[in-house]
Structure formats: C-alpha cells, structure tokens
Image (cartoon, rainbow, N blue to C red; front, side):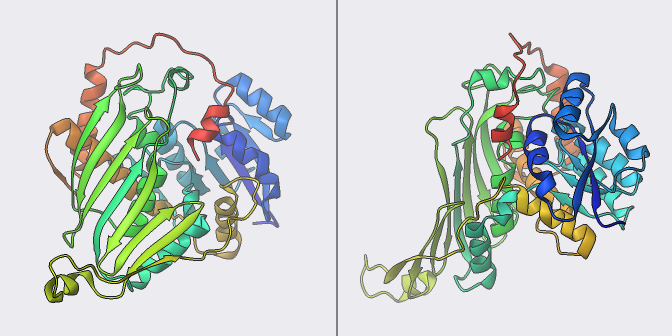
Length: 390
C-alpha cells in the first residue's frame, strides 16, 4: 500500500454526504472513487468531490483504484456489497446496521474471516464519545459490583410522516426490513451491549405504524433478563415528542446515569446494597450515598461525530491500530433488536442467542403478507438522512 489508503464509497447520498464532506481531512486517506446506482446522485457527487464515479460497486471493486470501501447504501444492500468487497480483498467500513437480520450479518462475518488481511469496522461512532468511554472504563473495572438493573429509554428519535415519505423503501418490510429498532436504535443497542453485555432473554411489545402511515414498528417496549439475574427495560419510539434519552445502570454499589455527550453521574453507595439489606438495623434505612459528577475529557470539536471512527479505521489499515468498533461485534446489537422484534411477533419471551432462522422466517412472512401501499413518495434533499444516522 502506498502513502495513502485509497478509499471508495458505495452510495453518495444521505449519510454518505456527511462522510464525503470530511474524508479529505482524514490523515493517511485519499478519496479515490465513488459509486451509486442513481445516475443523477452519482453525477452530482462527482462534481462535488472530483472523485471518479462508477455505476456499480462491482465495477468500482474491479477497477483496482481503491484499497478500502465505506458502505453507505441503504442497509438492505449491505450484505451483498460487503461480501463482494471481502471477495475483492478490500478493507471494509460499513454503516449501521450491518444487515437486516443476524443471519444475513453472519454471512458478512464469514466473508470477512475468509479475507484475513481485510480490516473490518462498523460505524458505531458513539463508542468514541468521551462520556461513554469513561462509563465503559468504570463498568469494566468492576468496582461497582454486579449489575442489578439497566434502564434505557430512547424515545427522542421523533420523525414526521414526511421523513417516512422521503423514500419508497422507508417504513416497509420489503424495503427496510424493520423500523425504529433497525434504523434509529442500533447506536443505543450497541452501547447497551457494549456496557452491559447481552441479555439472555427478552419479552417485548411493539406497535406497528402506531403514529405514522408505515407498516413497521415505530414504538417498542421490552424487558430484558441478564445472565446474572439483573433485569433491564428498553423503550424506543419515533412518534414521541419531545422524547426522552435516559440510560441508567444500577450496580450493587450504586447507579451510573449516562448522558452520551453531556454528563456522567455516579450515585455511589458506601456499602454494598446486597450486604446492607441484610445488616441494616432499621426498616427504612438507606445506605449512605455520595453523588459524584465523573469527570471526562470534553467532547472535541470535530468536522463530524463520525470523524474519529473513520480515522481509527484508516489507522488500523496503515498502522495496525486496534479498531474501536470491530465489524464482528456489530452482530450483537442486531441480534438483540431481532430478538425484541421476534418476541413482539410471537407474543412470548425469546431466548438469546436468538434463533436466526426464526428471525429470517418472520421477516419473510411479514413481506409475503404485506399489503401496504405508500400514499406518496417525496424525494428528499438528504438532510434528514444525516440526522437519522447520528
């Protein structure tokens, strides 16, 4: 490889516009090529970036002009594109979600394993936020004791009907393969699994098209059980305003409240909760508790929140730097989201690891039974897409 990693993009609209705006500032990278099946979008991106355009990802992969590819196509196309990229020996950075369902994602992981020289990352940029990295440090240190509960409310993904009308594929089983769990929640689900591990069982309820003219889920509520017996709650919605973003993990020695970009507060018990329950000499006595604002480095001023992860991907290729968000880990949040959807579909608890064949069968059934027809499709200027993928 030369002085620069030659980067190609699959998809030029939506979130790709965000990445293309800053790719020139990534040290050790050079934008070499772009491709899009939409001729108008490709022509506009060629004029905007000066990069060579290709009408298909296959043509770009065969060209020999790129070393790495950033996949920004709609997620139903991630799997075949990524598999082709690994077959071509390319390094791959894929936007979230990795695929529509876990079985599809497993095919990507198998292709990556068959190309051992390829670096494989996924765009979970929230892992670079200083607050979340400090939270990860505290949790992994084990000083707070075993986890007792996690509560994750992720209902500030408000979307209007115009958002869903901005693409024929949006909000449909055949086009998108899911709703809020698949499109808006991957970052939060990834953070949940990254900090707390995978639950062993979920029981969920979903509303489908509750507040929008769509056929997929736009409101979700789930209860989770973890291996150590801890319970969790997860809620998400695209139809709630102003919405709430709340993430709290309760441990034996206190509770950690996390605001991704603003604050990290620890309510620290001086004594083990489990021990205090058994030894307290009063019926209503509480353990002594200190409220502590945990210091974390400030959120840096960046061209985009995605910038550090893109730089990390390039540095992993050039210098062997450890990936912040390895592609192999992306299947976990996807499997959890799949399990939540399957539980709602079946009306009963679902164990994890999720039955990947059952998830695939459920989604195929949803497609086959669908009679949904969009009332209108309004071409978007792309601005809402960038926000959607933050």
